[in-house]
Each structure stands twice: as C-alpha cells, then as structure tokens.
Amino acid sequence: MQPFALTQAQQRRLERIAREAGRSPQAMFRFVLRDGFEQCEEDVRASIAADAEAARGELVPNEQVMEEARAIIARHARAPRKAA
Image 1 (spheres, rainbow, N blue to C red):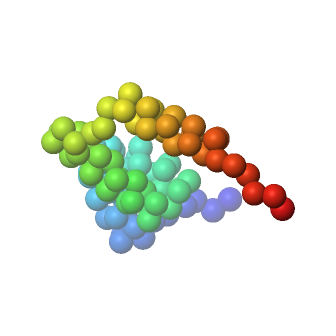
Image 2 (tube, helix red, strand yellow; image 1 turned 30 degrees about the vertical axis):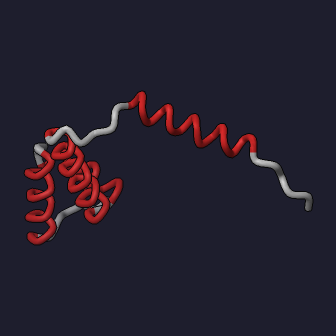
C-alpha cells in the first residue's frame, strides 16, 4: 500500500481548518479523511457561528423548543386525513 501524502495546498488547508476548530492538524486529519475538506470547513464555520450566538445569548431554551415541537406534532396529529 502506498503512503498517503497531502499536497502543500492541502496541508495549508488542513492547518487552517484545525486552527479555526482549535484542534491539531493531526486530530483534524481523520475528519478530513472521513468527510472531506468542504464538509469539515462547513462544520467548523457552523460551530463558530453557534458559539457566537450562544455568547450573545441568542439561543432558544430547550424547553421552549420542545414545547413548540409538541404543539406542531399535536396539530398535525389532529388533522383529518383525506380519502384516497
């Protein structure tokens, strides 16, 4: 089996993603192998955005989300079904 090597551009990309995620390149590499660069970059951006929302206090409490979800489910459960 031939060893796997990254190009210089891929190595820089891995290092950037790892830095943004607060991980080592070695730790991030397994995710890049599994999911690809694009998915890892998207995941890191989403995580950073979620952390920023939390820091600004913009999160919706879990209890509120669950209450709204139950209400939606209840409304749809009561909806009459149309005959085929």
